Image (tube, rainbow, N blue to C red; front, side, top):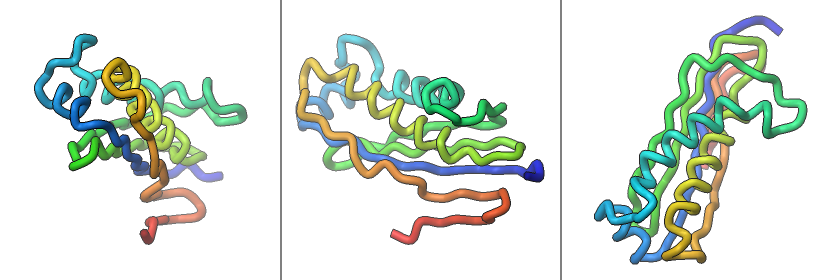
Length: 137
């Protein structure tokens, strides 16, 4: 495969109780700021993807970012990952979203064990032989 610039965007959702949302938004979670921890965890997860997923190539990432956006029922999570290489970064983006969601869960599970992580998917992929992919729904 040719070396090309590659980018992937993955998304997911974590839903939680009103009490958990209020604690996060008030900055009252005893373990610290779960949003900052989740961002960092997502970036770290992207960088460690090849250690977690069998047969996934280790990649040098040129960019990894995780955004968490408050919603009516919890948080929307988006990860954007880039590299210049011979293989794509879809797995890294998906792993970043999942790592961020699991960190949020861990940090507020004492208040809400019924949280749900869902809708994790690849939203967009750029570069490589297969070209541009944009999820239609």
